Length: 210
Image (cartoon, rainbow, N blue to C red; front, top):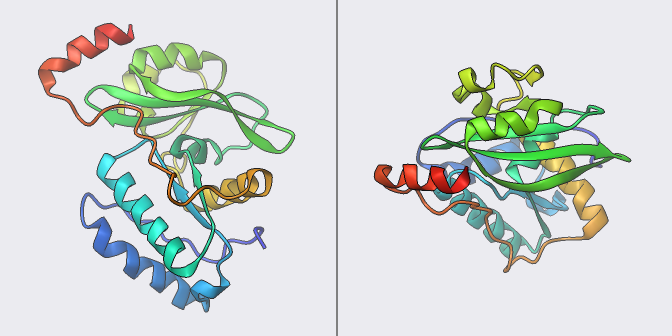
């Protein structure tokens, strides 16, 4: 009914996503006493994040939807992270993008809906710290660049480090009810930045972003 969390499984893995996902999905269903026929909507985080993880996760979700004829709704990983807080202020989710950068966004709650203030994008930590001075920060990017963000007055700490499934589902239901399902074949990951670049190119990219 979109109101109760039946079961949530959280794990951290650097590899093996494609072999783990089917096992976890059917384990969750079996443990909860449900099957795929009981599922009304597939929610999937579309990034930004790990290029390989996003591709595998979205591909798996699409496969489930295609086989079982289920609607799909993609939600920004940063929006999912921001959805963990329900506050009357700007919320700045920030995720570690590796190689000295962060993925950052800005969201706020308006009439029960979590709205995006500006497009998710790639930032230097110092740049995003200045932008986020008027709101609350959360995410593993804050922990990764703790010294940079230490001057920010409002920081939500654990468990607000990572996008969580129950927030993803809640936001996907809201967006689905307002916008309808996403097109199964045109839904793509939100990479924001190109794949990892050589270290010698970092300084060049940093000069462009300043």
